[in-house]
Length: 367
Image 1 (cartoon, rainbow, N blue to C red):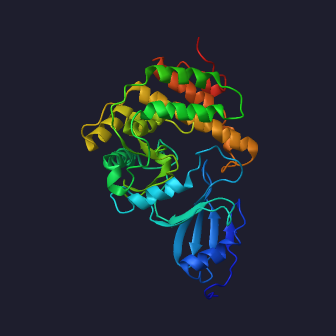
Image 2 (cartoon, rainbow, N blue to C red; image 1 turned 90 degrees about the vertical axis):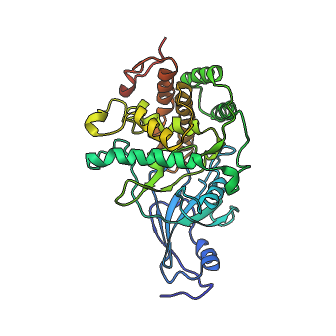
Image 3 (cartoon, helix red, strand yellow; image 1 turned 180 degrees about the horizontal axis):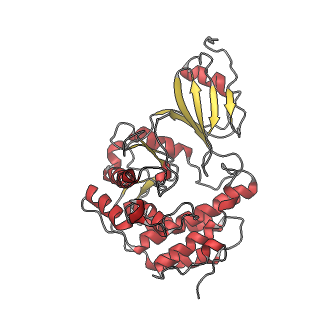
């Protein structure tokens, strides 16, 4: 039945809730009007970061995204920064979901949260795109490159993001930041990560002054594609975004070509020609063609991306141990912290397949 303004309603819920949804009904009624009996929450599985839900309210199809419950590291799960980016980009040619509202207090759901419009489209978690017809795979990856280039072509100050990060010395600051996050972990030391950190500090390139909006986690699994066309219709998961060097994002996109299928779904060892997938050189060339004047991708940028993701896996493992991970399968990802560090060392030291036994769980640091 239709509810009048101010009436309370109980949602239909699907999946595990990490908050009591009861107080949400009156809040949404005040801000969005009555729900006409269509209040529904559905937990979206698979994410390792901020818990995310489909939310139907009246005839609106929305997405609710919030911080995880429990203790979190300082600066992590930056819901407020995600929402600011959506507001800044919603009227540009960089595709994002339309923002609806942000609630910064923890009084309602136990953590801050925001709402955005739900965008219809396809999500691909398999980098090999094996479920697609072979002829559609390369165009999807080319759309990834084009979208990344479009984001990096944007001038942050023109959309109100000129103060979204500190200018200059991006890689130096990022290496220091992720080292602090790694060392704040209650887990024991991981020698491969510490060795990689030393290499990055020694081999970081001079600052070239280039500054752009960086997503921080730009990969195919964080993109929503048109239902039928090879076109990105929304970039998702902006919590790690900042102003920084575009080659950090491009290096992050290069990770699938340097990690195996059982290492968070990489492409290493896949027959790219048979699968009609681009190799890394083709992907990077497409990006650089869409962003003229961009600098070449170097081993440092690829190793840095793998290092950063290795530290992210440390955090996922810690949350799994604490029982606050967004994905119940998060504990199984703990070994990837070491594996990604080893893959980065392969690039850094130009050693091919030095982790040959890695998929058998017996990876060792080479002498």
